[in-house]
Length: 140
Image 1: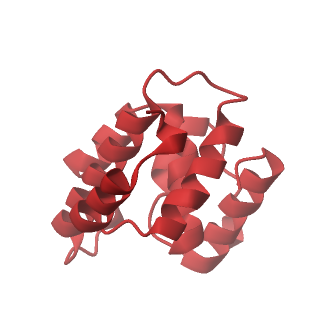
Image 2: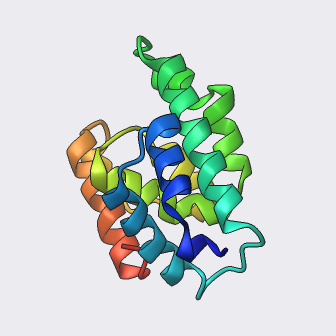
């Protein structure tokens, strides 16, 4: 069974284990289809599951941290970056759902930074800049 034809058991596992809603799963599948035009990913299913596992670990680890450096240097966050460009659409889909500090990872993965200098530090404006960037590249 392919990633795109996942059965209910897999979706139920994602909901239970990682808090991933069916709607989010569907939006990510659509984003990954677009992403496939740019990159070849050997195991999309594994990348999706690994990303969500690491994201949840990162969020749990940094819940009470205020230092952006500490938040972004977290081992799970760094492992997400280490997954390579295949996670860019996953991060953008996550940003679209709920703004968070994915900007460091996005810049490392894309070698781009669409955020204007005067918008640095403004979570909403930084998120909007990255989502516009993603739309311009066909990711969201």
